Image 1 (cartoon, rainbow, N blue to C red):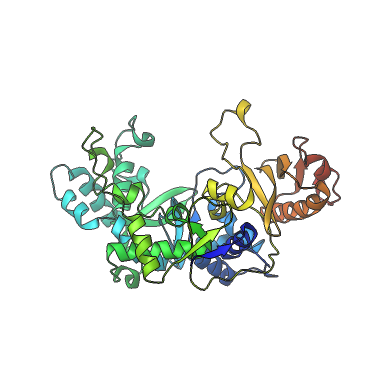
Image 2: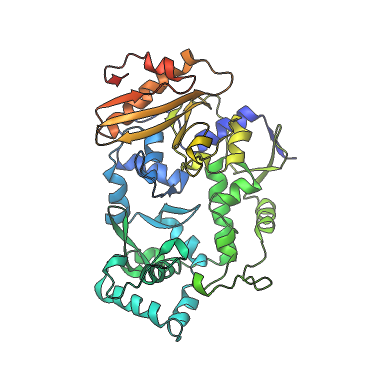
Length: 418
C-alpha cells in the first residue's frame, strides 16, 4: 500500500528535506558543508542582479554565512566541484563518480586522436602545458561564431573537454571560468571510483528523492536531470551532432524502469499525496515534521523551486521566471523571489542590489492569495534586513508596486529607506 500524505504533510517534508528550519546562531563553513550535503547542488547562473545565484541557497537556509567560504570549499579545498547537475551546479565531491557516465571521456579521447578533433586536441595540450587558463588566454582562441551562445571555437572546445570530463573548472576570475586538467582539480580518491551507468543513475535518483522528501517521477528524475536530454544525447562535440530528422543520437529513456526497480529494491517507497494526479515516491526513513519554523527568501535558481509544477502542487503558487519576459508583460518583476514563512510560501518580491548606491531595492512585493500583510510584513522586513547586511549594502528601498509594498514601507527598521 502506498503511503498517503496530505498536501500539508508533503509540504513540511519537502521544506525540511531541503534544509530549511531553525538557523544556527553563527553559520560556519561546517554548516555550509551540511547544507551542500543535503540539497546536493547549488545552481550557477550568470544573472547577477542580486548576487550570483549559487551563493544564495545557503543564505536562505543558514542566514548570513561567510560568502567566501563557498569559494574556499570549491576552489581551494576541493570539497565541491562544478559540473552539470540540474543545470550548471556546484556539487559535493562525492557525486563526481556518479556523474562520470555523462562524460564519455574515453570516446572523447578517441575523437581527439582523429583528424576532426585536431583543434580540440591542440586546446587540450595547451591546457596541459599552461593551465589553469581561461578561454581568452588560449594562443589560438578562434573567432566568435553565430552559433552556440556566440562562443569562439576555443571556448567551444574547452566546454566540450569540460563536458567530457577531461578538463575541470579550477577557479574563476570574476565569473570567467579557469580550465585545467581534471586530474589536477578533482581529488584522486574521486577519480578512482567507478560506478556502472545505471547504478549511478539510480543513486542520483535516490539522492534527489532524499532532497525532495516526497516527489513525483518528474520531481525526482528532474532534480539532477537524470535520464534527461544530456544523458540521452550521446557523446561527441555539439557541432558534430546531426539535427537531421531521423538521425537523432538520443537514446531511449530508461528512467521509469530505473524508478520501478528502485521501488522493488526498497530504495524508494511508493506514496500518494492528496490532490496530486501522479504517483509519488518517498525516500526511506522520511518522517513527517509536526511543524516547520522557516523564514527565507528563495531565488529563482534555488533547488526548492526548480520544478514549477511542484511549487504549485505543494504551495499553490504559480511561479515563473520573468527574466526573459518583455518588461511590459511581466506580472511581478524581473528577479522575483518567493518568501517562505513557516511551512509555506506567503509572498514574493522583486529584488535588486544597487551596488553603486549601496541599496537593496524591493521593486515590488506581492502577497499570496489568502495572506494578510500584517502577518507577513515584519518577518519579510527582518529577512530583507539580514540580506542587506550580508550583501554589505547600506539600506533598503521599497517601491510602491504590489499589495504588500505599503506595509513594508510602513515598517520601522532603522536602515529602511522609504
